[in-house]
Each structure stands twice: as C-alpha cells, then as structure tokens.
Image (cartoon, rainbow, N blue to C red; front, side, top):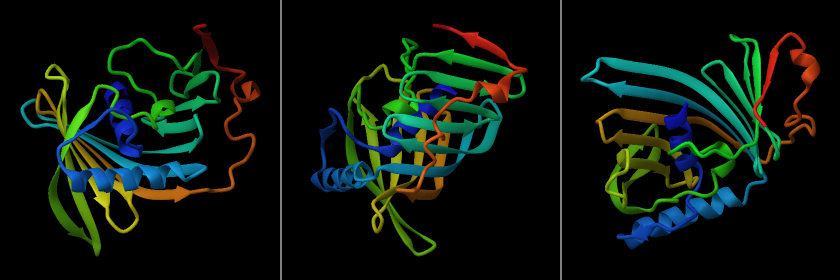
Length: 214
C-alpha cells in the first residue's frame, strides 16, 4: 500500500520543485497540471501491476479513487480509505475493522491521496522519452529521474495522452529493479457527487472493531 500511494501521488499532478532538463517536457507537464487543476472532482479507475522477475513476483489488482479537493475515497486490495478533510478512515471488511486517524503521517516515503496535487516533494529531472500509438491514442512518455541519489525509485516513465492531456500510464522502476505499472482505464471529471459521499457512517459498521489512533 505504501509504494502504491507514492505512485498514485505522481500520477495525478505535477506541482512542486522539479528541475527541467527539456523544455518540451516542461510544456507538456505544465499542460497536464493546468488541466487537472481545472477539475472540481475526478473519478479514476485503474489497473495496478507489480513485477519482480528475480524474485518471481507478480501481483495484479484493480481499484478506483474519487477525489474532490482534499477529500477522497480510495478502493484497492479489498480496503477502503476515506478521507473527509479531517480524519482518515481505513475500512477492512476482511478484518471487520475500521481504523481512524488524522491524515498526517511520519512514515518514510508514504504519500497519501490527499497530497495528490503536491508532486515533486524531493525533486525530479525529466526528459522526453518514447512515443507510442495505442488504439489511436498518441501517448508521449516522459522520463523522470529523482534528484536524490538515495531514492527508492530509479526512474519513472509517465505516459501522457497528448490529445486529452491526461495521464494514461505510469511505469516505475525501483532501485531493486521492481517494476510497478499503473494504467488509468477510466478518467471522469466534474461528476455530480453526493454530499454524503465523503461522510463516514458508523451505523454501517456497528459490528466492526473501531480502532481510533488519535
């Protein structure tokens, strides 16, 4: 979950302290940032694949996330994470448990979806990479390399749909050569969201163990 949230924070937007080494890449990233920041809400469905050939590991799952400002609902691996702007509710049906905490975390490399619009906290350089035609869509990849030489990320390839200026795919190569791919299958914006969507209803979880960390 930790590495997934790190990747997800990258895939939405590009605000922060990046160092451009390619003006064309800079223009594309700025266009994506402007487009994303113009939306009042977003609903994304995605596919997530983690691979490590040396360890013979392959994990594949799908999920979705709904965002409105800093509020979000993330569903992945059977767990729901709901942030209402003040508290984070992690709901695990398998364990019949709800964990309640603030959204702040001191855990290293943990970035939560509420921080999706504050990318490049540690800084990246970026350059144009390959372009692909995928089902009629022109996808331009940009290679992002961490400035921090001790980063757990070796590099990231960010695939951008040049027509919509939306993120299509992110491929992250870790320092241990683990490959993580996140593909956006559906991207809806400015949907009419229920006012109750980001409200936690304790009556739905009366049989659950409530673990309040604050």
